[in-house]
Image (cartoon, rainbow, N blue to C red; front, top):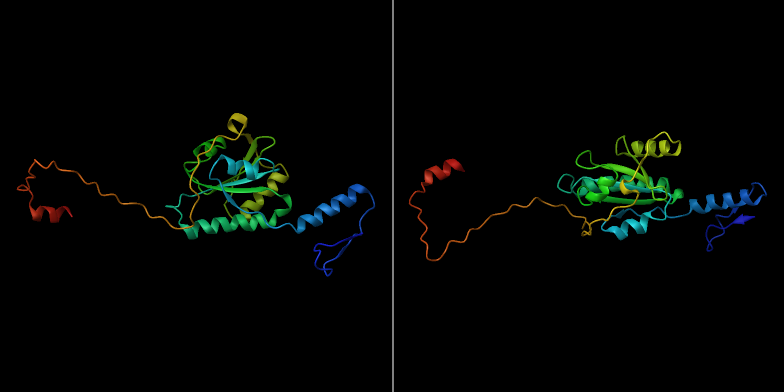
Length: 212
């Protein structure tokens, strides 16, 4: 038996040299097909539908909560997203769902997995079938996340049930536009009634300079 990864090329033909039982053949085919699947996309959680679409039917959903854009601008955020992309490539054979949210953007989700308020970035692995989750306890890095996944596979990490045993209803928000964001400075303007004179006789310019 031979496997042709591409119908347009015969250069990458793989010869099957395993056992002859149906279980062995199917297992080999699944492994080879998984090697050729594209890496997963990393989706932002912008509403309840986006969570369901990329998580509901998966064995595991990997959900990261990244720092607020004011605390971690675009370069910083993209570095974290790149770590997720690299780990998605490494573990693509598992066909997990990969999602992220900004800190504070989906408070109900953070509350359901008991993260939030501090310690960003953080990550949880959620089992939609069991409605259980495990939390990354190490650093948000390739090494830290790799150890996290290995501990999940060997059951050396604790798990807990999602609050309410279901996904919470989430906020509908605008997706991140990929840009930096600056904290706004607001100037309050007070309207003075037209029939009321404004008395500036008590204002001393020297005192104003001292205040500035």
